[in-house]
Image (cartoon, rainbow, N blue to C red; front, side, top):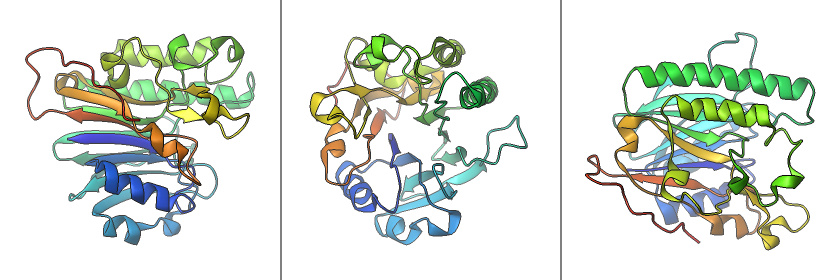
Length: 271
């Protein structure tokens, strides 16, 4: 089973890139963020023509999340993060697919920081930590895959010293992410590439892509039941270099049908 997360940065404007990647990579499950499309503008016909069914939570503007399933129907279990009935932003959706519960978050950016946007991000992350703990307590196989807008360590940013005051790298933001990991979640890409600089985002400005001045902010977190099946993980970074591409590249994992009898050997990420 191959599961991926991809911040498409506008699903309709980037649809040709998304469809090309789906055809080439053929993931079984895809979590999408930053649809930038209201509910009625989601391109479900094109997605179905590509062999996928989908659920989505659209919103005009910068938000919007979706879960795609190849040759299967995702069964929606939740379309909002619990804990704040006044939060109407479309930043979380969840579904059951082929015996796996899939959560798709799009964590707020939080900039400029400090300020109300950072405060909202920290409250949102606390709600995510609480919900993730509830999911973990079920013992079910769960993956939380999405754009966390967090660089967990210095290894996840090209020049850490330039990001110390940014809302993606502030200590309190990273601390919230580490509280997630401390619950028992496994950061899949980092688990198989413990010392490698792997990025999932390159800004459009200052030739960030050409300089490989990237960030790793898109993550796939696995519950223990799934972590035992982890066989491979990586980033399809070549997608970022296509014309009219998103500023993110898809991150992915492959799960074996049965738990591994030994720790899997790291596989090089896709180029």
